[in-house]
Image 1 (cartoon, rainbow, N blue to C red):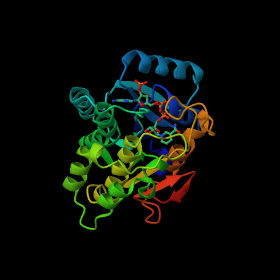
Image 2: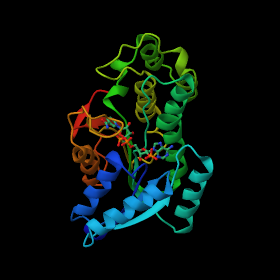
Image 3: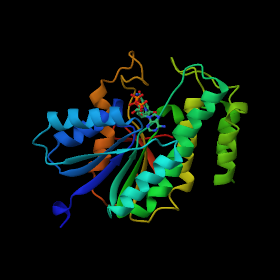
Image 4: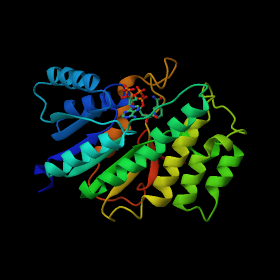
Length: 273
Ligand code: NDP
């Protein structure tokens, strides 16, 4: 019976920001979940865990912690080994961890693409064997990843009708050579962040669908422009609002809806991506 089934959620980068308030949202809801909160810094993650556990002592959900630095292969391996050993099936994988540097150096541009794109793909694919048959993958992307926002050079490269995954990865590796014609959007002047999310969107649109089962759901999400360290203080969205679309998609039936599957969702609605 669907209602008796406890769903397991694994979320990355949940010691602060949107990840943290998303866990808080789940704990405060009546639906019981088994939540695995992860963070790259153990102290920060354990602090988040104890703060949330003491704030919601009567939650119907359980909360456990696992260290995870998405850029660290050893850390990813440890997480996967632990999931395997405990025979855990993940029902909802929320790839939330992300970074943005303003006026990034060349090295920071590559780190942005690694964290927001390559490491998301890597973790997703390492965890695919442990995703339930009707599981969901929520890739926290951004409105800034929309194709139309990228500079013409990158937009054209990503719009190639014969784009393959290895071509996409080649583009992502050469990102610093393809962004000269990026036009800043509002206060976001740094092109590597939009590019990294455009790569993630391309993966959701073109390549992830054939890697999951026809009963599994995948989404790119724009959580809104939210007041976090990454979003900045002038963002119009309050921190709690950043959890809304993620919680909404988590709460939808575990049945594929082809009208929204493999698309980008923001403010609970379909968006161009
Ligand atoms: P924050 O900076 O508040 O939080 C980012 C989280 O990601 C932190 O927990 C951070 O950990 C973690 N993180 C960064 N690098 C790694 C890594 N290598 N491994 C594991 N965790 C890591 O940002 P937000 O909460 O705003 O962002 C969450 C997601 O939402 C991101 O993917 C972002 O791109 C997206 N987003 C945010 C928007 C906004 O307006 N805020 C708008 C659109 C999308 P640590 O504390 O250790 O740095």
